Amino acid sequence: MERSVPELVGGAVCLDIANSVDGRVLAVPEDHLRSYADVVDRVVRAGGLAADEGDALLARAAATPDAAAELVRARDLRESVFAVFHLPDAVLIR
Image 1 (cartoon, helix red, strand yellow):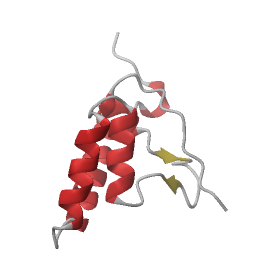
Image 2: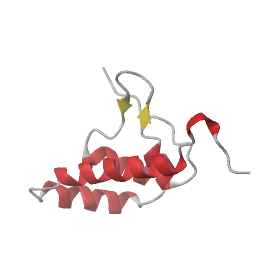
Image 3: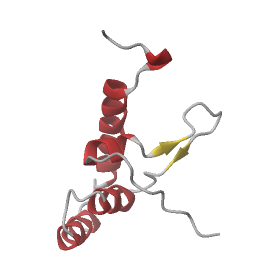
Image 4: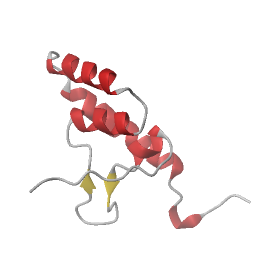
């Protein structure tokens, strides 16, 4: 089965990364950042990198033994950005 690529609607690269988990309230949310290639693809599609820059990052990652750590860092950054913009119970400052 082919994986669907979600539409990017954040309007900014950081928000499109923060929105890379669907169904956060579900028992098993769907994480769209399953690999470093997914991170690069999302940033390219959001306009944060040109396609050739994304290709260069993927080539460098393939030659780097600890490239998997970048996925962990990207997910950690995603959660930090999500926490900044997430408003539980719609609490707004007036």
